[in-house]
Image 1 (tube, rainbow, N blue to C red):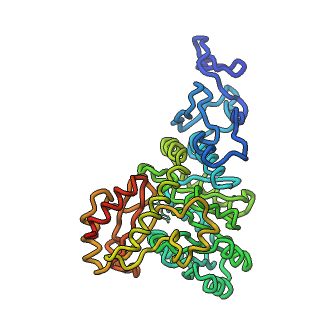
Image 2 (cartoon, helix red, strand yellow; image 1 turned 90 degrees about the vertical axis):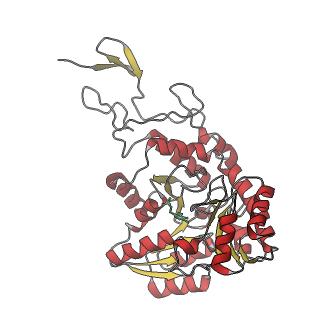
Image 3 (spheres, protein in one colour; image 1 turned 180 degrees about the vertical axis):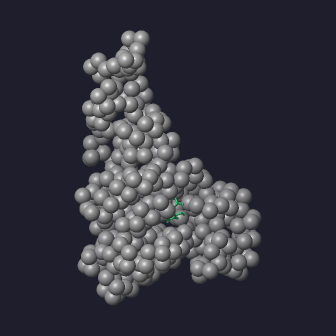
Amino acid sequence: MYRAFRREGNCLICAAGVAVKKYHLARVPPLANPPKPTLHPATIAAQAAGATDRETAGVVPAVHMATTFARDENYAPLNADNIYLRSHNENVRVAERLLSQLEGAAETLLFPSGMAAIAAVFRTVPNGAKVVVQSQIYWGTTGWIRSFCTRREITLHEVEAADADALAEACRAHKPTLVLIETPSNPWLRITDIEGAARIAHGVGAKLVVDSTAASPALSHPLAHGADIVMHSATKAINGHSDVLAGSLSTAEPDAEIWHMIREDRDTAGAVMGPMEAWLLTRGMRTLPLRMREMSKNALVLAEYLSDHPQVETVLYPGLADHPGHAIAARQMTGGFGGLLSFIVKGGKDAALLAAGRMQLFHRATSLGGVESLVEHRHTLEPHTGIPEGLLRVSVGIEDAQDLIADLGQALGQ
Ligand SMILES: Cc1ncc(COP(=O)(O)O)c(C=O)c1O
């Protein structure tokens, strides 16, 4: 009988008798030098939580593109951790491990987009149940949840969750199974007290899910404040280079029923991230703390500049002392307030579009969290959601703050 390979020890010998590959026959051994949990986030990130390429001694993990993995002559997997790509990929594991450490989570699951991560959470809600979702959050989330809840006969209550009394009243009246908040919110920059929201949700037996995209794990740890699941559009700051679409869910309780459902659904329904994206995401995360520090610093300087500008009506940025959520943000965010800020230009839509059109450094583009600064006129994209016509949302990058100020100044007409 022709046999392409036989096994000797942990080597695979090809038909010509040449040892072609050293296989890890048992579980993939733990990392040679896993970082100690006492290490600071910047160290954990820079060293990708200890991930290297053990095969070649490369200090950067290799990309593992295989969709399927070999079995021995008795049909036992040569590596029990690797059967098929939809469930098993080392690049995805490396990125998940790193994100878990940065987030303070026991387990993280990556998804091919932020929306896929949100959808994975909502698919756990039974037909006919009730959910409470923060109002005036990222419009894509609101729009998808509305249509999903209608299809599944789930009663959706939208509430301004930054108002703790309104959230408590909605939860008391409706007894939801799930509460979703987004803090800081996009594009209003509202701040919800995560600890208070967790108390309210848990008081009625609901799970609290926090979309922490605008803060990123560099600035906020919702699980430490009582959230059950923290969600990110990793397309944004976590990747940080506007070149990967990704989403994540993390939990401190991997044995919870909701987490089992999410994990199994990802495995079987297949909303998984590809190896190359996961590799890029790990590369992006290596500089996450550094980028968020610079972005937060720049955003605060710009917010202060805009606050004094005669052409600007209002600045929405939680780092400003007069922002209504500043005290809560200062308590639950560490190291800065993020790179997302909105401001309302005097003169409404025409004045805002004129200013955006004059900008030369800020790209006129949607999204946020990349190293390059972006400006967006949200009203053009979502005219029906109550966004003020004069509102410009900017994602502040890591350019020199003085260059960004000069660009804003000339765009607004000094
Ligand atoms: C706060 C927030 N949550 C979720 C999403 C959706 O993420 P994705 O575009 O990665 O699907 C976005 C996208 O802009 C967002 O800003």
